[in-house]
Length: 544
Image (cartoon, rainbow, N blue to C red; front, side, top):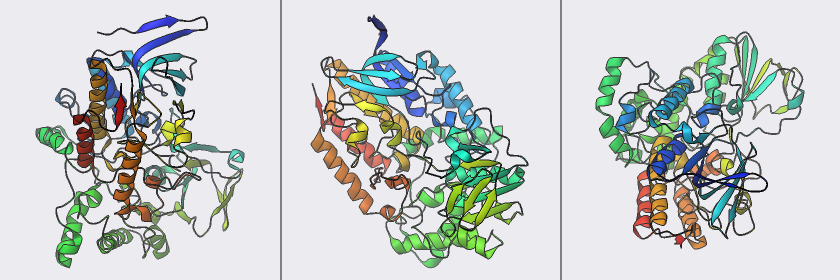
């Protein structure tokens, strides 16, 4: 086993490692275990006080996974055989418990430094090492720097005039108090109707004195089909796990199913309707990624899917005006081009007398006041304000760290006019640096744990390749990242995704370049390209 050396300097102790990993979620866990098993000295730096990545921070009421539990875990049989979720779509509490289970099983925490937020990193070309400064004052040096910061690690709070004047409590969903917050008998306002907004609203509607939901864009949410799992059901499900985990490695989205091998445009209206009904009853993300294969590329097929969703949704809403706001006759953007959330009773809560909907397109927020929110139509008194306003997604977790490369610029500066990231895992000018779920990888279009394993294994292979040959440095080339960027954009331009102002394109963050941030060609195609690079001696990288 490799040991960690500690060098003493005149100013402070500096720890020397082979690898620093940032983030103790699925990707950080997987890579720590893999690289440690290869005999490398590795530490994970985690800003939270415990493991589970995004699920340490997302502890707001109703927070839960939108992937089925069997898919939202590691595929190793020594991990899944003794673990069981009590629900098909696990809550944040169960996900945290799962991480603690894996942590104990693999003895990971001994190499994780909690409450250590990485602030700055700089590459030293003379010694081919990264120097990493953290919030606790520590300085650590490592040969390789691997970022596993995830899709949503930089919360976004829009400019809301008067927010600091609000007398009640206000929290972003991703910065929720760890001790919780009681919504019972309170006047609660939720700004935003993305996944976290939907989930909080469902919980608040059941207990709040009054709930006001402030919506800018309708959420084309899909039925979750949540259910409890008894021991017999879990036993039967586990019989299929080996095949399911094999399938998810080769599927489009990293799940155990693929889009259908037919298009909506080639079947009769009766068959199209019957198929929509079938995947609707399956629920979850099936009506999005398990339906006809042309929904995201063919405008007519997409409109048929939207109309089906709209009619199913409106049938649950009693007030026609509210129904038109939540599920408009004419879509504001193509179906599925914004991330569909999963809902349990979201649309039904608007039939309750204690729930109001505010359409911010018609009556925008003017300011936050001491007692609530003032729109152009009037004031809404609130005790608690929930900011379900999303994230600087995909790139934000990476660019929030001051990462200095060899060209006199930070990663933030490099990407200020658009992302360049070869294979979505490396950037020219930043040697010995890799990232999982990075921009121009399948990130948003693939199951997180599947990506963590496949990208993590590829990264482990690259580091092993370099290390075995005693090479000191690798780096993506500028031509390779430009070629990859062009391929990512060409794939996106062949779809309907650019027709929506979504976080997929960074359109939710003022000043952020509007461009596709995800590889839309499918996880299996993506990994084939990554493996092709590896087979050619890691084509697209200079190694020496």
